[in-house]
Amino acid sequence: MGVSGAAAARLLLDEGSDVVAVDSRDTAEVATEAGKLEEAGAGTLAGCEVLPAGGFDVCIVSPGIAVDSEWMQEIGSRGIPVLPELELGASRCGCPVLAVTGSNGKSTMVKLCGDALSLAGKRVALGGNYGRPLSELARGSDGLDRIVAELSSFQLETVRNFRPDVGVVLNIQPDHLDRHADMAAYARAKSALFDSMSEGDTGIVFEDDAERVAKLSRGRNRWVSFGTGMSVDYRYADGRVTWTEAGGVEKCLSVESTVFANDVMGLTVAATTAAVRACGEDGMAVARAAADFEPLAHRMQLVAEAGDVAFVDDSKATNISALKGALRMCPGPVRLVAGGLLKEGGLETAAELLAGKATGIYLVGAAAEEMASAWGEAVKCELCGDLETAVRRAWADGVAGETILLSPGCASFDQFRNFEERGEKFTELARQLADERH
Image (cartoon, rainbow, N blue to C red; front, top):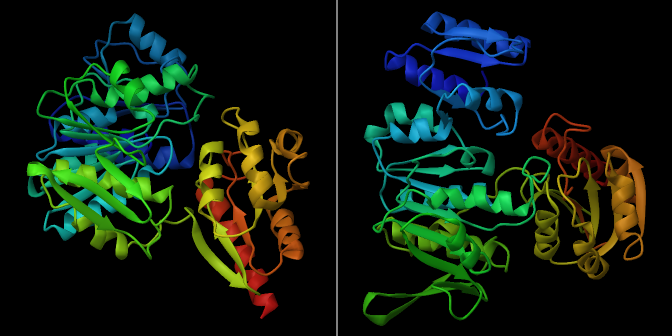
């Protein structure tokens, strides 16, 4: 009875279906939602350990339920078909869906796509992991030209016939290996985005992942690539995205003097340009959207400055690949605040970059000692325990021209409810320290 499950229940109730909503939690929040669903006509079971008996036609699964969980195994043994909430919602949408997945950068791309399509005059809504669940958006989708949906590997694990007409895998990097068996299983979940596509649909993939995704996918779509190499369809280099239109016409889009003018965010612009054009719109709308773009909260967000030291909140960086991307995006030396709950290995892959970029590392949470062991020979690491101690020590050590960067490389759940709360705490501390300096 979380956000997506409740949206699915309401959509099905509107259609006249008999619905039973089940949740293992028995919290005040769940009790409130259960009361609302019961008023709408649903049966509810909170604090549920055993699934209800009965002849159910389908199980709508929320992304928080792992495919190898006891509940899912029981559903399978009872022969009940499983459908993810996103596929239920998409099947009821009255407009096309542009779907975006990937390990890092999904939300930024979804917002940039939405902004560009809106500037092109289209009526657009954003959903999935970004904004409202597709089951909620579907109920008013007849008045839209397109939905842009952010999708996670959790949502894609159980898709059967989900078919966006345009799909993007922004990147595949180690993430969520605490849930997926291995990288092969994780990559397969991402590639499922394309499984039901046909010849008229477009799959957009980063150059480094293109061969792997094409082999894993069962779709019959056409493929479009983006990246920095010379052979890709949409190439980012030196603040510009270039591509070739029909008839051999070369096009160039500039994002110089925007937050996208670097080799990390520039790839997002290349993928967005490919996606907007696949939707039938002018790619140059992306340049206008990039020029006006405001970074999303907790994603490389400048939150305070004092004494020529910048505080940047990148709390959304919950894996090592995202941490490395954040380091590359900072223009000067970095004092890195990192740590929390590790979701995968690969700490050693960041050591060389840290050696050339970081002037100090301030570690917090459950992974602090493991990170110090992996990085201690490259950069001086301090075990700080909690976020406030880490930020204050980084500030005490900081010198003009440096960035104090919160880019944890870990999940937040050992010390915070979510990455948002962690970022808000960092922002509060940063602004407090900046005010003290003034």
